[in-house]
Length: 212
Image 1: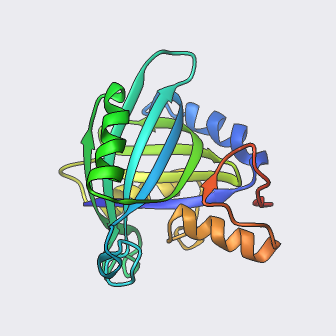
Image 2: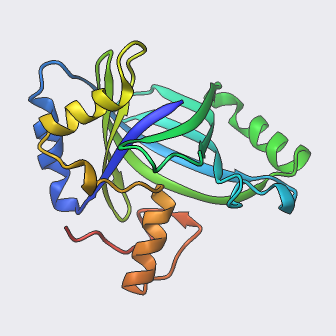
């Protein structure tokens, strides 16, 4: 189970958010990572992960720390539950599995040519990670804007209380959080700004922008 809240900002907030979080001595800055995430769907339409009754995302993610040769790769399954939006924070089903980056080509072959899973979309981002035993706070730079995500990591504290405590520390308001996923935000921006929506969201493509 994953408990989190996410806020979106314009690019002008990027350095401000990083400096603000670096001032909290109780948080460890783990570095900045370039991430490429590819999302797949079930090969059978009646079992589509994107259907309303499932509403899940199957993802393959590769992460490389900037100025370092360290690579991380994982498969993750994330799914909104029927009561995800009823509480003050998002509570979602999440399962993750790590794998070696060198096995990416073999994994891709198995997913696409053996299991016949459909590559639906992908996105790039730069992720800055701050954490301690109770919380993980990330500042993500997407091609269309900045996201601040606050996720509970404590195993013995109330997840909602932990997240709301950090929201208060950061001077944020719970009601300002965006409760849906990154692709919902991207689609919304494309629609309102009349910008072409790409299946693969990359920094070198024309993108809508968050202004606030």
